[in-house]
Image (cartoon, rainbow, N blue to C red):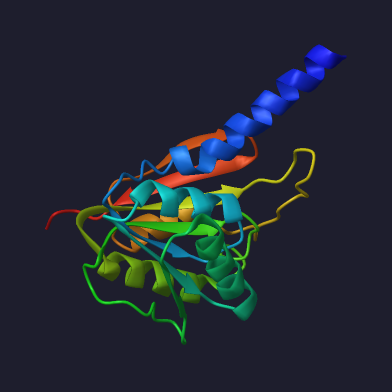
Length: 189
């Protein structure tokens, strides 16, 4: 019994230091990243810590609760996170400003957006990421001890949407531990 407790304790410590959803993004020190939405605190916390002082962290928030979570994460980890509200269908940042964009869809809220609006956000994300930059969508699949089921609309297809927004190639990276990771690249032309 004590052995099981020790293994669980070590597993929780490892996960807190380097969560899967952070590792899968591949974000590096010095990069500039934008996260759209803030539902998974561990995701934003890990990304902001990875880019360090030489990089830049930003969040585009569609609701006050998400903005508040993002600000709290920044205060907790000691990172400067530029949190801005989304006004309409435009992401509030300048073109070609980011190396990477991460969409936090761990609670299914991005998938629940009307198809045309979701595609518009993805087109706008393409505007914000530099040529050769990338976008990653982190979807929560639910399950696990503390996560409920996450449902998405029947016609939802993020790979199709990423490709339609001009991210080529787009691909499914992995499905693991209750998450799905999808990636798209902005071509150099």
